[in-house]
Length: 612
Image (cartoon, rainbow, N blue to C red; front, top):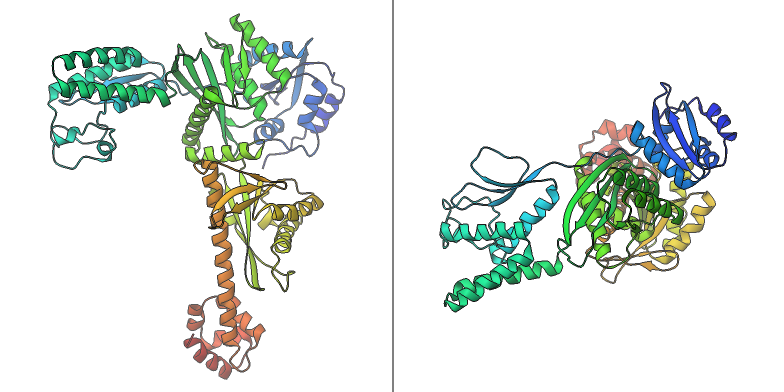
């Protein structure tokens, strides 16, 4: 819980007199240190947004505001001049709450191990181990991709077996059977022939696929003329492997001019941005930056692009972003970058084709890098990001609630509420509901409305058990469920995203329902897998509660067979002891005290319980 800034009244008063012209504002703490610098096209409106009452700030902004003691400002003639000034001031003062770029850079090497049958590996530093090292390279990503591609094309072993010590000791692994490994473990290849393959793989890494194909084609024809058909066939297969890899990979695209693809990954309050760089038709480098507490998403991208390229020696003509910026912000940024490099700059958000695949590759890198920082899997981060994009949410949802109704006829109608936090179930926040106002023929819509109303009235009343507010709500049902519940949320003043989860005839997740239709996700996407897990979990939870209620009703009916035990006393016993095992272990005194019955009735009760 952040402390309330007791300077807010003073800051609001000062801001009320502020000009509405463009410029930069400079936030300072009590020690007069600059902690944040921002730009605005209207200084009064922008600065007042920080200090208004009941402001719903993101965690990073809220933390910054809590430390503001005073601020200064500089007026400019235009918003573009404000952007240039902001960039200059940030580089000069490096304020704590601005984006300060520290990437994952380090030198990398391609290592050819010193063994009778060498391996191709990635190394972060040279060691005194008699191995051959190629490098250093500034891009660890490019090195990893190059080694991965070479191992795949030349079918080199990547397992942990030692050769020739383990020749013929075990059967070949799966990689051999799917044609990803030559099967060196079978012991059919001598070290001289194997080293020739390693040399070819190194040439492939150094010279690229096009030159390697030309050389291998020449060798294949030469081998064929010399009647060395086995070698010719091996070279043919290798050429085919390179060609096939080139058709599907994003590493080489000679038609693609220089460009950068930039995308962010967000999990909870943390953010990371990755840049994938194409140079000379080849995937050249990747840089990832952990930004810590996330900020407003378009502003975060804009500030990142400005800071990143202001310190680069080279800026490509094409920059692809994962989200759209406002037209004026994009124009100002384009003009600023053009002034740094003296050539045309195009900033865009691709919707299809190879540029979109590059943005997705960048997003995948950002997810993996963020997962390392926050201890989550890249798939979880990707799933939340895909879900947010599909639903048009401004950011990935941190808290997701899902509801399901379970009934058996008109009796024991119950509901389950499950909660996923940052893509994982948080069982401490799960809740169960026994329906109170739905009688007679089951009515799923009325049942769902009752559950949602009870949940959010408890929230509005300050009940700590329901104090966590969801970013996204799913109802196990279709468009009708959403339309039945949405007016209720509006009446209660609850503003959050609401959707239904639709199942097919085989009771499997099929789509996401809105109030006016359906949204489909690819069944292979991480977002689809996440909503499937959520729907399966809420169904399991509601059904288990319904079965427990039905079992308790059966127990209650059995207990009422004892003279002197009615439904109320039976319920007291079940509430106290909960299970048949606990009832059987209860003493006569405990039974008497719990149900307010005589000792004789308690003994009769024990006899009935023993038969249960």
